[in-house]
Amino acid sequence: MTAVEPFAILLGGALEVDDRVRRLVRGARAIAADGGMAHARALGLEPELWVGDFDSTAPDLIAAHAGTPRLPFAAEKNFTDGELAVEQAIERGAKRLVLVGAFGGQRTDHALMHLLHAVMLAERGLDVVLTSGSEEAVPLLPGHVELDLPAGSLFSVIGFTALVGLSLGNAKYPLDRADIGFGASRTISNVAAGRVRFDLAEGRALIVARPHDFSGA
Image (cartoon, rainbow, N blue to C red):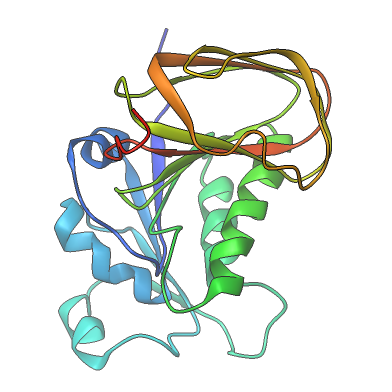
């Protein structure tokens, strides 16, 4: 079976490049969203397109990537630069998206939008992972997901709705077809025993992992 070619979407949040991040973007095509271009060099990527209104892009960054094709948009628009970059990747045939720099940054509203957007993209059938290096996340929709985490590292399940029939396997605090009310904190700060198994009957959620955080072990 042919491997799915990933698209790395470079966003403006925090990034600590480690081996997990490098594996996620290995062989990826890249599209930068405005100031997310700052991550390109650290990742060893040369984006094929640079999207945005460039209102948060430093002049020296623009000069350093003067040869990269740009798709400019007006600052007053109905979409974030990240969403525009994702849609450009989808137009180019993307099936797997790695949202790099999706956490942190100066704008909480933008960071939260990245998380919600990832779940919406998963509902459209795309394979999505978000990373900052210190944090990693994948959407959880009805069905089965497995996430390979270092034993002893922290993870949480953040419900964007009430969750029905949530099961967690290979974790310090397993669940068996549990119903979790919207806003409940029961699924925060669990501990992986290695590859964690997730099953969900109904609802929408995001699995947020901290692969280098062993404070719960």
